[in-house]
Image (tube, rainbow, N blue to C red; front, side):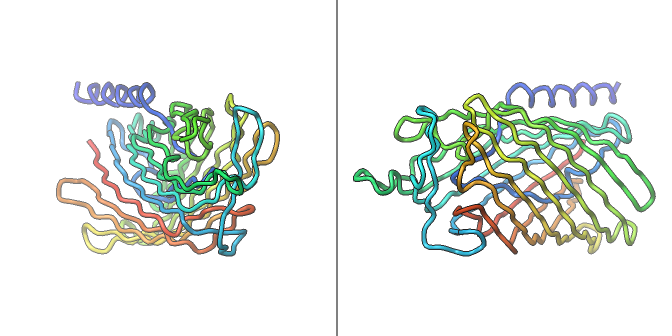
Length: 332
């Protein structure tokens, strides 16, 4: 009876995510922490529900042309109403991303885990000079956005389970549950990368491999993920995204685990009405130290700081100077 209640609870929670949740993405400076937390990659034991709450803060103020810092970043406006791209329309200053997300996973069998992600807060504070070169040029910080993001639902399966080795594969669907037609301060549809959602249904494939060097003390891991870029009904197509992560976990004592990882991400160029959108698409490499604490109640607390190693953008773009991820995870 107890196990049945857990199955029902897991189903209700995941169904609730499907029904009420939205998405996360952007052009004038989209960002997210892309790393391995150690709480969302494996499989859960049968009948175990894990709830993970995370807070992410990314400040984008580094002005880049390719890999070099520059004095200004001029980016185009996507004029959805007239179906045109307006080059060098904005002079970018800063985009501050504040994200709060709930991740849920439920072990159906020892090898199969269902998972859902709910971006409950997706706030982007954005500053730029608008209508550059026009007599009406002006500074504004009113063109950011806030709202629910695009929910993600999927499943993870343990392909290989050995004493020292674990390989999991995952398939997820990102649903168009977030707003993607919010208006800017001038009354037009806001930039795609400032919106909480994308308006697209995307497929995400991922795999995670972990090998224990010293059982329960030291392990290394590799993970990879790929998301296909889709076109929404505004005729805006987001570029594909590829992720690679590699790192080490070391348990120091009974409750403290530290980690160090390298995170690589490549996003393809966006397109609008079959035209390439300038200042979209980039390749980032970050070094990420992290720490996880297991409490006496079985709750995990974790924190990560992403430090840029190499940033290479198409044309000119804002890039993150650093990123912070904090979270708490509990299994029931």
